[in-house]
Length: 389
Image (tube, rainbow, N blue to C red; front, side, top):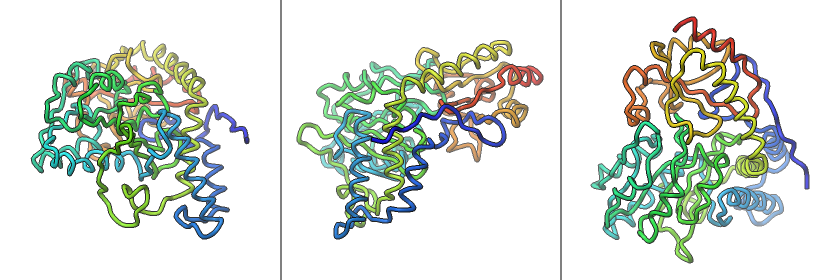
């Protein structure tokens, strides 16, 4: 088997890229494999009359196995989509008909979900569904007990994100899964930010549905997956939201982009293989950042005990986020919230749900790095911030 070399850093023109929660740089081995397939493997995985189609089908099957291994699922439980947004839409909207049929039209979620979950829930609320958004405190994490207290006899779905995209705070999905116990509600986890980074939480078999994004795990943009676990021999009664073609067990229609599918599969495999070394590098960067930024009095948003090692969301008293980003523009590339809402800035609903003041929210900045991030000149970053404080 070909050995896949680990990448330790990536060189880019311009400032150091510290917005990996928005999208990650692609792993070189993944790019190399996709380029090979684009050049040499034109087959459609649905074509079974020639060897090109058969080879494409084998590549897709291998990718299912690679993704399933991350969360201890079965390959046949992996459905390919265009990304985590589509996956979450299928998981939530695809259960609507079953919920109506069974009278379980109550949904439990949280106040800090991504728009990819929030907006499908809003659509269901317009159709008469009842949605309970469980609050969080300043820690940035919901509690399993709070989710449990929101459950009702007619609850048909619980949807809680794995890791928050703005704060990097890990949510207690494993504890929530245990708490659900014998309750019939389906459990969906939007794992766009945590898949391949925090491994243990998603391996609980009580988590029925898992949304996965390739471009958050150093794979290509435009591909993702929905993991649909069986309950014993029972399939989850999902309905498709797009029709035509019958691909992906009739749940997600359309021709599979084989090079992208192979790319997410390889990215998932490397994520597990290099998990410890990646975390060590991210912790090293985090330590350097915190040491330097302590001098400018940062206030971390969210409990540091629950945060992934590659994310730092902070505010500085009296410093506006926009001014800070301008001061750092040619040095590091950072953000002040979710990439999905950055075109028309809105105050963070996540930080508001945590009970932070308007001033602290307006000053919040998110830095997110990865194992390929080169060394950052943190003392200069601190000096630039000090100059506007």
